[in-house]
Image (tube, helix red, strand yellow):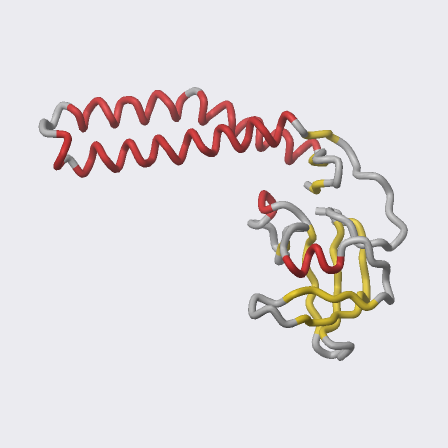
Length: 165
């Protein structure tokens, strides 16, 4: 899954199906389950001091937030392969960088949205300082990004290839 500058999220068919199944579960059986938990907790009495009720309501809130996130993501999704790249760093690329030009101190990561955070490879958002710093650069380029302390760091892009899953 990748996000492009036009706010289109490219998904593989497998990723699209997985997210759609999650949305269907959350808007169907999961809503029924949480409603039953809330009803059962309500029957326990005083709602002001009812930990089960408050926990169920919090769970419901988190679930509804995820429903909104998935709905928005799937509305902007395109299934297929993102546009071909020519070694330019873009969302959906596996990028290898060297810190401060030291080719022994490297990091390889997937530049993608957090939906891929559970994959086998470390994931950086295109909006993160490092992600936005390397975005648009080509293999061999030096790129700068801002550290949390406000200082600048430089990296050299060693490799940028499309993520193959």
